[in-house]
Length: 254
Figure (cartoon, rainbow, N blue to C red):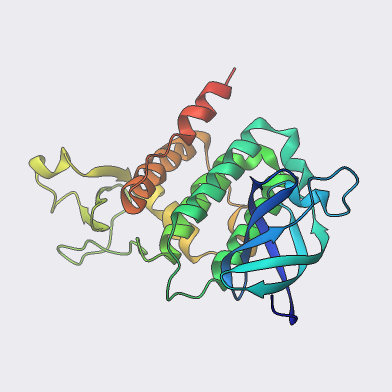
């Protein structure tokens, strides 16, 4: 094992068992991307690093590296995001976000924006779990943008015209193209995803907003449900994964 130490900040995306008292931590970092850290002995009673067994904590890490693995030397909490544990909806959305990150491929792309997005998302979800719907939709869409799966919708991809105030728009999820009512045939309307302009404007905000303000968006509940459904279907197609989070959230409703 190399004797050189490396220090950085990171977010624990997941923690899994490895042998009896060791854990493998999946940690998202600003510069190294998503890495695996071997944390030996943290499941022992009275371990000073026991907090790393919990997902979603934001920490300072010091590690050494050997082969493909990083080995934990020291860690301290910056933000524990304990507010997540007070809300089943918040925890459900947090696990959803962590799964999307683990599903995604970040090869040949900078991860600084993803790191900032994830950090702010967990922090906001911990402090305002009642905002879980807008956090869910905004995180989905911003992540997909960072991965190159979507774009800002400013005009019809067929005629080039800007959208008028009362228009409905039609999105082809397979290629991210959007067409206006005038360009969309009755046949196409059956296979494309229909969105009102207000929903498209919200999606554009999710892409263009300063990350520090992203999750403060004020969106009506009926529109949020549409955005949650659309971004879930879009993410499932883009990442080629089945996503069941909305079913889980629906089961939590009274």
